Image (cartoon, rainbow over all chains, first blue to last red; front, side):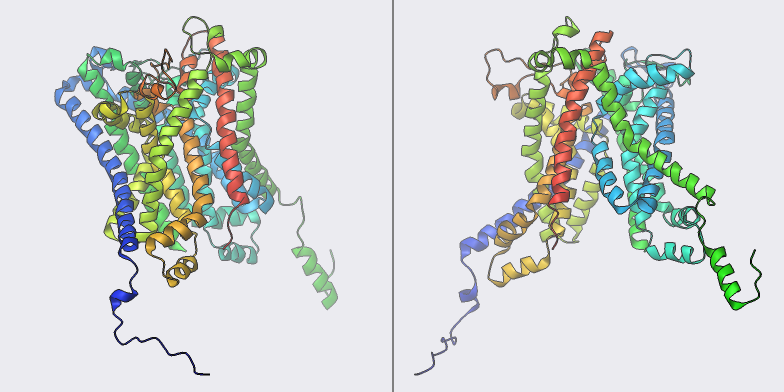
Length: 314
Length: 312
């Protein structure tokens, strides 16, 4: 029996080993289709920037400069006092952070340092679920529960719409986000640090506060920054609970109503038909959008930078 | 106090001194209970929220839930108003969102993971996605108003469910990309190498091996993204959902995509800003409906992801 002859390879070329032209063309085409989709995501950013920047420019180039510092925000009367909105924005966001940071950090420390793995396995998805609560619902919660059932016990003269309730509700909304980022930061701290601390005889509370928290500090800062940015951008809670009308008179009282950048935008958007005639009022929508976009972009990039640094740290 | 004279006595004394005395560590237990309190507060408010909404909306939920679900908005009185336009509108908007966001997002993720690891264009795309994820939702409303509803009026028909859906698609695009990237990265290289080894082209490797392997995770991310869109009201207000109410007239369901529309969260907002307690009942009842919808969709997605998480 003769062994089978090996195939004749003397005149085999690269072309013979290649697959059919159709399969190759299909594969090359797919690459371009995927790249095109990636390009589309960049296009979305470009369109956002172009939209807000061009609208904001129209506003800035037409508005009399004195009208930007007036008695309040009355877009249809041509009074665009930015400080009114800015003060309300800062007040509401700071209240939100006072609510969200302690409970978010507390939950993060508990889940990362203390909780039994089984508890953690249930609580992590629960936090994720909480993050999906629609913000309109929290707005309704603010006017139907936080103000009448809680705040009215402490303040005798509290407005039905007020910044305090709005701030608390925004705070509830950002707790899951802050807890989640903080927990990731705490878990990124290597176990060796905790073991070394316990080995020296430190109690768990000492290890948590004096070793783990400082080691995770930059990540915790990032959680605060990103949470703050989210609070600034929150629209529906503030619109429902504090800035319902499209006008705001400058005031510092937390028990009074007041609009922020976002609620002023929503109010202008609601009345699009009415303000369409008053060109300047409509353009102020884009001006506020541009400011909001710029502020949150800076905050998010800062937070992102810190998180990335942290990832490379250990 | 044991007298430390014998070696055995010293050992016992040392062991006593080192032994943990429960109850002695007051600061430690106080701290722990503080943390538990914070955790309960952080997660427990959902229960309070649900309870308050159910109690406030009980008149509608117990008595005429069916009427509420099947009737349209009415300006005349709260008792005549229902939410079906909002529910149908939300489904329409979610459908358009999915049609635009899912293919674009998944394809972008494939490009980033499979084709362009680390080249300059990919780095720009990645940075861009991270930044888009942090843009406030109402800014997407401006994009929708200026671009999707006005510039692309010929395609979307103005402030319609199509324009609203495209707006939300832009908003959830980063979520779809980020979760899909994670899913694709989790597929082990050995799978790709084996496919190349038997002569598959890159397209064949992707479409027959990598995508099917990553599909369940990608789907979960997509569902989470759509659930996010379902609860979002702010951008839709700028794209006309607050003033428009879907009316069939003699149009069929598909024709209403290019007519006035509204969405469930926007409807809740409309209920909430009407003066009067009976509108508050409607707002609370509609809040319960949207909470149940969003939590059910999300819970299912999260459960499935944790259940079918692939171990390679």
